[in-house]
Length: 166
Image (tube, rainbow, N blue to C red):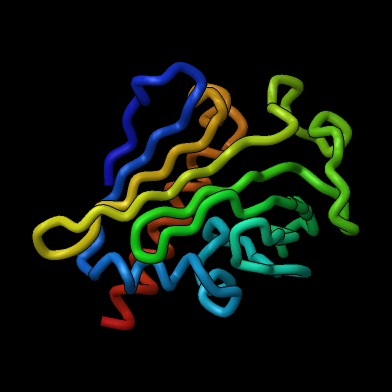
Protein backbone atom coordinates (compact mmCIF):
# COMPACT_ATOMS: atom_id res chain seq x y z
CA UNK A 1 0.00 0.00 0.00
CA UNK A 2 1.15 3.48 -0.63
CA UNK A 3 -0.17 6.71 0.70
CA UNK A 4 1.16 9.73 -1.06
CA UNK A 5 0.50 13.41 -1.27
CA UNK A 6 -2.01 14.29 -3.92
CA UNK A 7 -0.99 16.69 -6.62
CA UNK A 8 -4.16 18.62 -5.73
CA UNK A 9 -4.04 20.71 -2.60
CA UNK A 10 -6.56 19.81 0.08
CA UNK A 11 -7.00 16.20 -0.93
CA UNK A 12 -6.24 12.77 0.45
CA UNK A 13 -4.87 10.31 -2.08
CA UNK A 14 -4.27 6.66 -1.17
CA UNK A 15 -3.43 3.84 -3.58
CA UNK A 16 -3.30 0.15 -2.90
CA UNK A 17 -2.84 -2.89 -5.11
CA UNK A 18 -5.04 -5.97 -4.64
CA UNK A 19 -4.56 -9.40 -6.16
CA UNK A 20 -8.18 -9.74 -7.33
CA UNK A 21 -9.99 -8.54 -10.44
CA UNK A 22 -11.65 -5.11 -10.53
CA UNK A 23 -15.15 -6.61 -10.53
CA UNK A 24 -14.47 -8.64 -7.37
CA UNK A 25 -13.05 -5.61 -5.57
CA UNK A 26 -15.96 -3.45 -6.73
CA UNK A 27 -18.38 -6.01 -5.22
CA UNK A 28 -16.86 -5.41 -1.80
CA UNK A 29 -17.90 -1.74 -2.06
CA UNK A 30 -21.32 -2.26 -3.59
CA UNK A 31 -23.36 -4.18 -1.01
CA UNK A 32 -24.26 -3.66 2.61
CA UNK A 33 -23.45 -7.30 3.35
CA UNK A 34 -19.87 -6.86 2.13
CA UNK A 35 -19.30 -3.41 3.63
CA UNK A 36 -20.18 -4.50 7.18
CA UNK A 37 -17.32 -7.01 6.97
CA UNK A 38 -14.58 -4.43 6.40
CA UNK A 39 -15.69 -0.76 6.17
CA UNK A 40 -14.66 0.26 9.69
CA UNK A 41 -11.21 0.62 11.23
CA UNK A 42 -9.90 -2.34 13.20
CA UNK A 43 -11.55 -2.38 16.64
CA UNK A 44 -14.67 -0.65 15.33
CA UNK A 45 -17.96 -1.83 13.86
CA UNK A 46 -20.19 -0.38 11.16
CA UNK A 47 -23.93 -0.59 10.69
CA UNK A 48 -26.05 0.82 7.89
CA UNK A 49 -29.47 2.21 8.67
CA UNK A 50 -29.93 2.98 4.97
CA UNK A 51 -28.03 1.77 1.91
CA UNK A 52 -29.19 2.47 -1.66
CA UNK A 53 -26.27 1.79 -3.99
CA UNK A 54 -27.62 3.61 -7.05
CA UNK A 55 -26.70 6.94 -8.58
CA UNK A 56 -28.64 9.44 -6.47
CA UNK A 57 -29.16 6.79 -3.79
CA UNK A 58 -28.24 7.55 -0.21
CA UNK A 59 -26.69 5.80 2.75
CA UNK A 60 -26.72 6.37 6.50
CA UNK A 61 -24.03 4.58 8.44
CA UNK A 62 -22.67 4.49 11.95
CA UNK A 63 -19.14 3.52 12.88
CA UNK A 64 -19.02 2.63 16.56
CA UNK A 65 -16.20 1.87 18.95
CA UNK A 66 -17.41 -0.92 21.26
CA UNK A 67 -14.61 -0.25 23.76
CA UNK A 68 -15.90 3.23 24.64
CA UNK A 69 -19.34 3.55 23.04
CA UNK A 70 -18.32 6.37 20.65
CA UNK A 71 -20.48 6.61 17.52
CA UNK A 72 -19.85 8.49 14.28
CA UNK A 73 -22.87 8.78 12.00
CA UNK A 74 -22.33 9.62 8.32
CA UNK A 75 -24.75 10.30 5.51
CA UNK A 76 -24.12 10.63 1.82
CA UNK A 77 -25.31 10.33 -1.73
CA UNK A 78 -23.86 8.23 -4.53
CA UNK A 79 -22.83 10.60 -7.33
CA UNK A 80 -21.32 8.15 -9.80
CA UNK A 81 -21.23 4.38 -10.12
CA UNK A 82 -19.40 2.70 -12.99
CA UNK A 83 -19.37 -1.05 -12.25
CA UNK A 84 -15.86 -2.39 -11.84
CA UNK A 85 -14.30 1.03 -12.48
CA UNK A 86 -15.42 3.93 -10.28
CA UNK A 87 -17.57 5.01 -7.33
CA UNK A 88 -18.01 8.60 -6.14
CA UNK A 89 -20.11 9.67 -3.17
CA UNK A 90 -20.56 12.46 -0.68
CA UNK A 91 -19.82 11.94 3.00
CA UNK A 92 -21.07 14.22 5.78
CA UNK A 93 -21.22 13.96 9.55
CA UNK A 94 -24.83 13.30 10.56
CA UNK A 95 -27.16 12.53 13.43
CA UNK A 96 -28.95 9.20 13.87
CA UNK A 97 -31.86 10.39 11.71
CA UNK A 98 -29.57 11.18 8.78
CA UNK A 99 -29.62 14.95 9.12
CA UNK A 100 -26.31 16.59 8.25
CA UNK A 101 -24.77 17.83 11.49
CA UNK A 102 -22.25 20.48 12.37
CA UNK A 103 -18.90 18.65 12.55
CA UNK A 104 -17.80 20.75 15.55
CA UNK A 105 -20.99 19.86 17.45
CA UNK A 106 -20.15 16.19 16.85
CA UNK A 107 -16.65 16.58 18.28
CA UNK A 108 -14.81 16.93 14.99
CA UNK A 109 -11.86 19.23 14.39
CA UNK A 110 -13.07 22.80 13.67
CA UNK A 111 -11.30 22.68 10.29
CA UNK A 112 -13.16 19.53 9.18
CA UNK A 113 -15.45 20.33 6.20
CA UNK A 114 -19.21 19.92 6.41
CA UNK A 115 -19.06 17.47 3.51
CA UNK A 116 -16.38 15.67 1.54
CA UNK A 117 -16.45 13.74 -1.70
CA UNK A 118 -14.87 10.29 -1.81
CA UNK A 119 -13.91 8.84 -5.18
CA UNK A 120 -12.75 5.26 -5.57
CA UNK A 121 -11.26 4.07 -8.86
CA UNK A 122 -10.43 0.50 -9.83
CA UNK A 123 -7.68 0.07 -12.43
CA UNK A 124 -6.73 -3.31 -13.88
CA UNK A 125 -3.05 -4.11 -13.37
CA UNK A 126 -1.00 -7.27 -13.89
CA UNK A 127 -2.22 -9.75 -11.30
CA UNK A 128 -5.10 -7.69 -9.96
CA UNK A 129 -6.43 -4.20 -9.34
CA UNK A 130 -5.02 -0.86 -8.28
CA UNK A 131 -7.51 0.93 -6.05
CA UNK A 132 -7.14 4.70 -5.75
CA UNK A 133 -9.03 6.61 -3.09
CA UNK A 134 -9.44 10.39 -3.22
CA UNK A 135 -11.18 12.37 -0.48
CA UNK A 136 -11.70 16.12 -0.65
CA UNK A 137 -10.13 16.98 2.69
CA UNK A 138 -6.63 18.18 3.44
CA UNK A 139 -4.33 15.21 3.98
CA UNK A 140 -2.58 16.78 6.99
CA UNK A 141 -5.98 17.36 8.63
CA UNK A 142 -7.07 13.81 7.79
CA UNK A 143 -3.91 12.46 9.43
CA UNK A 144 -4.36 14.70 12.48
CA UNK A 145 -7.98 13.66 13.03
CA UNK A 146 -7.46 9.96 12.41
CA UNK A 147 -9.45 9.83 9.17
CA UNK A 148 -6.39 8.96 7.08
CA UNK A 149 -5.20 6.12 9.36
CA UNK A 150 -8.79 4.88 9.45
CA UNK A 151 -8.80 4.58 5.65
CA UNK A 152 -5.51 2.64 5.81
CA UNK A 153 -6.97 0.29 8.42
CA UNK A 154 -10.15 -0.25 6.42
CA UNK A 155 -8.21 -0.99 3.24
CA UNK A 156 -6.17 -3.54 5.19
CA UNK A 157 -9.47 -5.12 6.33
CA UNK A 158 -10.63 -5.11 2.70
CA UNK A 159 -7.43 -6.85 1.63
CA UNK A 160 -7.99 -9.53 4.27
CA UNK A 161 -11.59 -10.02 3.12
CA UNK A 162 -10.81 -10.43 -0.57
CA UNK A 163 -7.80 -12.65 0.17
CA UNK A 164 -9.99 -14.95 2.28
CA UNK A 165 -12.45 -15.24 -0.62
CA UNK A 166 -9.80 -16.04 -3.23
